[in-house]
Image (cartoon, rainbow, N blue to C red; front, side, top):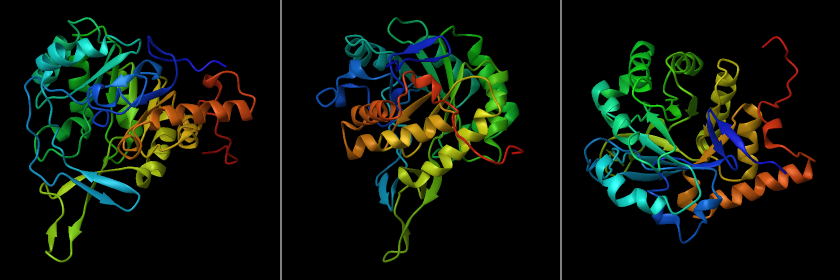
Length: 307
């Protein structure tokens, strides 16, 4: 059974990755999961300087999902390199650094610094988080600005470059093509969907940030549809995420066109979710006589050939 997949020039032993922001910097899950068994670890999003994030409450459970407005709290690029990366280097697993910025210069600065150290195998540009109230949200919603920032980062790194796309756009296939044309080696989708919850007793928003990002099973159909749209629009690999809770969910994403999957909210529900999902994928392959995971990608069968 061959479970290996390629994301650009980055080889993964299997297609199960962690989604940024849900797996910390790896240490938090090391007692539950053999980190070396993962396809890749995508660490919590990094900015050049540390960030405190939004005030609490920052998380609210919703039917079949979760709203969060963490506000990209993180320890910053330098602290990650000095304090967290040495631990991750102990494991035979690709480490992908998710990063973001408030300006093109900050994106470029973070990418340059992260590309300058050993032990980081790929970069994931977050241009999609819906929680910031001003400024950089435009990076993921304006095609011209997306092209500008991806092109600028592409020029300063030789590492595999993944661009994480926002679902909060009218045409995600267009945004994926823009990222591909600007030099992305892969795209990752989807991030959380912008949402809001209200306490009817107090008549106040449940999140201090008022709005947040919805994740979990509630958004899985949106994610699968968007992967399907993007699969028909680009030639670079797609990493699918959004509500993947078991192996069957992962297979759905791959049938829609994803080469690999990133597990997010499931990690909060079940700390061994990634391993359980990997086992589910293997069971599906065994049951259906599939020897190579790559043959599943884009294997959706549909009757309306004119679509």
